[in-house]
Image (cartoon, rainbow, N blue to C red; front, side, top):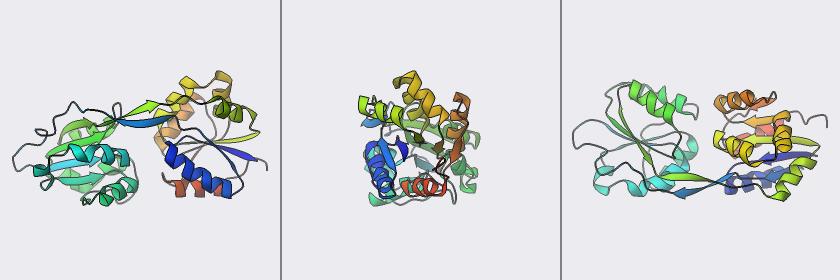
Amino acid sequence: MTHVLVTRPLEASRQLADQLEALGLFPIVMPLYTFSACESALDLNTAWSTGKARKLAVFTSPRAVQFGLSHIPRDISDDLEFAVVGSATRAKLESCGYPVHLQASTGFTSEDFLQMPELAVDAGEAVIFCAPGGREALANGLRDLGWSVGMAMVYERLGLRPETTQIDLISAAKHLLSVWTSISALKLAEEYLPGAVWTKILNAPALVISARIQHYLQQLGATRVELAVGPGNSELLQSIINRPQDGQ
């Protein structure tokens, strides 16, 4: 039986685990971080000027929507263009009653977002809602296009140490596949896991949602890193279904 190490945040991991079990696979649910609100150093009352320049609010994840919307002053929201990175972020924003003015027609990365032609004209003021330590490529890309950029770091990741049961399951797995949706999770796994367990993960097949994560894993020494067809649980599940089952 193939054991699938799922490292998404807990709710998403549990949803994927239920689907994997229905296929006869054995999920190991091991979220490596959770989320908490934090106070942004950026004053959103003054982040956008009162002038006529375009005003962009960029949400980079469903968590950015969850923790960021309440920081936007009500008297400013009607003047904003709401932009999202990825379909899941769009769904979260729309479920909160806000329109989405800008989203890349394809893809779900910062690089895909920056390719939108609408960003290359009439650059104005952009605020990116994110967590500390992320989305620098997005910020720099917008600056290169002429935007004034502020970073509203409205939530943070809190690391979760793996439990003994999870570590034991990884150690005992004969056929292991790990699933990664963020570099943050990889860094925490390398820090928290015993060396032998981390080495086993690097030597086993891995499924990732972006070329950036793929490259990062390969730099760590992994050689069997496959790209999923998309970032959501449904795409991850389809990619797992379609891959060879490691000699079984």
